[in-house]
Structures are given as structure tokens and as C-alpha cells.
Length: 84
Image (cartoon, rainbow, N blue to C red; front, side, top):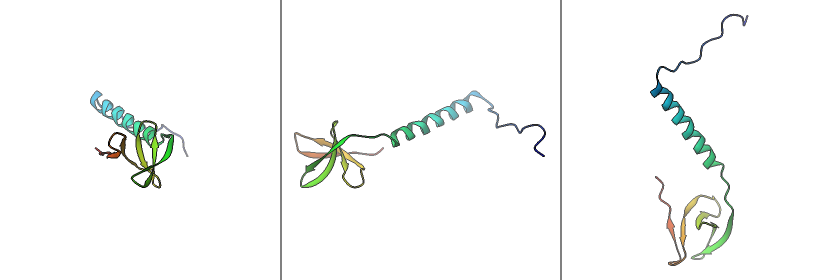
């Protein structure tokens, strides 16, 4: 067994289909890169609650590490991050 002609893979019919496949792969790669990104943070206290803050001013939940928003030093508040 195992002899004979190998099976053909899926053929790409046109350029549009190829472009869609490339965009899909690029999107998947970007998601993976974002997911694995490490951020250097410090612990900080804002309004009596402990958060993690990176040098760019982004604020993360101290236990879940989820992005909460960006710290506005002038008004001493966290401007919540809006997910798209």
C-alpha cells in the first residue's frame, strides 16, 4: 500500500481567491503577534485601587492583566479603552 500518485491539494482558481487567502493568513499572523506581546509595567495606585501601568500610560487590571484604558495624568482618571 501507499504506492501510486499523491493526492492533489486544493487548487486556486483565480487571483481574487489567492488574495483572500493571503489576507486571511496575514490577519491570523497579526492576531498571534498581538496575543504574544509582552509589556513592561509597574504597579500603581489610582483612586485607591491597584493597577498595572506601562510607560505609554496604558492601564491594565492587576489580576487579569486585561487592558482597561489610558491614564490621564492631568485629570487623574482612567480613560476607558473602547474595543472595536
